[in-house]
Image (cartoon, rainbow, N blue to C red; front, side, top):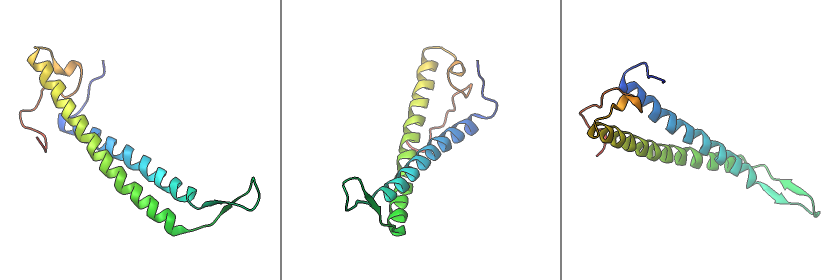
Length: 115
């Protein structure tokens, strides 16, 4: 079984940051791709396309992707943290060792940043 080497706070912070970074990168990339895709127009022929380069479209769509990525990442990380604590408390109430499923080995008594 894998064990987490480090404090429980480090685990939660790293997991939280990993979720936010994952969504940040995904939405940033999709924003840039969407900006490039919005510059492609049909050409004069049936199988021709024209790329009208406009850096402002890439900048705008990438900026929207960055903001959306951070927002969605924080929401998803908060949801993960809430389910993490619910799992820890459920296992503790059932008399099972929460370290067998999730680190940390002992649940902390204080609550997370939000209720």
